[in-house]
Length: 130
Figure: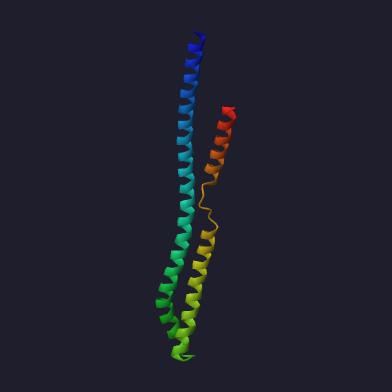
C-alpha cells in the first residue's frame, strides 16, 4: 500500500510539473511577444526617419530647386543655381536617411529578456531534477 501511495504522489508530482512547465512556457511566449513588439516599434520609428528623409529629399528637389533657382538666377547662371540648390537638398535628405539607418542598426532583434528567463528556467528545471 505505501508503494501505491508513492506512485500516486509521484504521478501527481509529474502532473503538477507538466502543468507548471506548460504555464511557464506560455508566459515565456507572452514575454517574447511583448519584447518583440517593443523592438518592432523602435524599428518602425527608425524606418519612419528613413522614409521622411527620402521624402524630404525628393520633395525638396522639386520645390526648393525651383524657388532657389529663381532667386539665384540673377546672381549666377541658371544651371549653376539649379546645381547648388539640388546638391544642398540632396545632402539634407541623405543625412536624415543616414541618421535613421544608424539608429536602426543599434536595435538588437533578439528577445534578450526572454532568452535570459528561459535560461533561468532551464537551470531551475535541472536543479529540480536532481
